[in-house]
Amino acid sequence: MASKFIDIATPSHSKRFAELSRPLTALQVKRHDAGVLSDAAPHQGLRLRANKDGSKTWTYRYRSAGKLKQLKLGSFPAMSLAEARGALLDQKKLREKNLDPQRVAANKRLEAELTSFTFTQMVDLYLVERIEKDRTSKGAAEARRLFEYDMGSLASRLVEDVQPVEIHNHILAIAGRAPRLALAFRAELTRAWRYAANTGRLNIPCPINSDTGGKLRQGKRERFLSAVELQLLLPWMDNYSDTVADALRLTLYLGLRSGEVCKLRDAWMGEEQDGWWLTIPASEMKKGHSDHRVPLTGSALDIAKKRSGCGYWFPSRVHSHIEQKVLGVEVYSYSGRSKAKRYKNKALCPVKNWAANDLRKTARTHLAAMGCPFEVAEAILHHKLPGVGGLYNRYSYENEKREWLTKLGDLFDSFNEHP
Image (cartoon, rainbow, N blue to C red; front, side, top):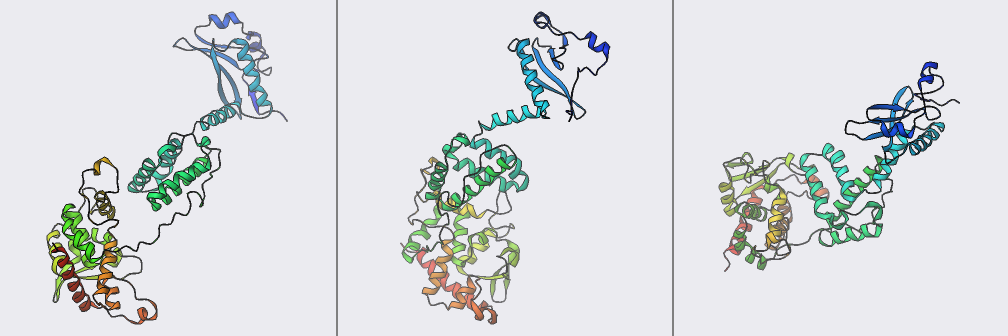
């Protein structure tokens, strides 16, 4: 079968063209200083271009599927006439196999790039081409921050040089301080690796699997704060910013999720016949929940009135309201667990190893300790009652919620006054 590649200069061209064509000589090549010189049979397609900057470039010109193509072979004098002709013949051998020399050269360049593919390059490729297009700006920023913070010593390493056991140990080290971060890092790194492989940038199969880094499930936190710990913490909370201190106190006094507290706003608060109420819409709750009715009394009401009047109670300069992680970062910065210089001079919280959402469990635990009926305490936390009882019992317990949240607030106020 005849090849689909055709040289520019072939016997099929006009006789006049063949007569004008003469093989190049070394002296011609040396003296050439303008335009293009073309070689003759058996080296048709070899050309020498004199560039404006004084350099000279050897190229191979041919047609592929009716399209004119050109491939750079080298530069003179680094590549002599004899060497250029040898390179030309190598390319013609590819054409005899129905291969496109330009495409073969491109593949070789790509393979050369792959040999120096670092983890940073692989991740940047994934972030720019995939994440920044598919996710929100916030989600993309979080993914980039995750890699920048946890890539560590892998960043500058070549992907092909890193053994699976090194990745395993790297993720294990992250899990030692933050299992959830390790889980996210492993998942994102796996996606980055597979994206590079799927798009032809990486020819090394991804070795990361569910065993890499070990079991990365963070167990359910059972932490709650005892009366003694609350007596230490509540007076000390003034060390936090006013925003964070108020959000944490509302989480504790009302038994709300800290994420719900961050979203509180004027539109949800209103005065009714029996007092002030918060009504958190079902759309802001977990799927399947109804509106959450929360009575406001005592210190919780004081905080609500102080924060209301400007729309969101905990506004953010970036978003409409602060994110839940703002509370976590502030609690962490005063915990003494970080070695970062920016936290070095922070006052140390007297209560160790607690998080913002532990305050919700604390509220529920102290309600039970005070004798609050199970159904009422679950209604305060907006939990669905289990089993058939939850299906048939449609009572809202609004009066009881006000009664027991008032008692709970009085208890916490007494802790706050503890010397």
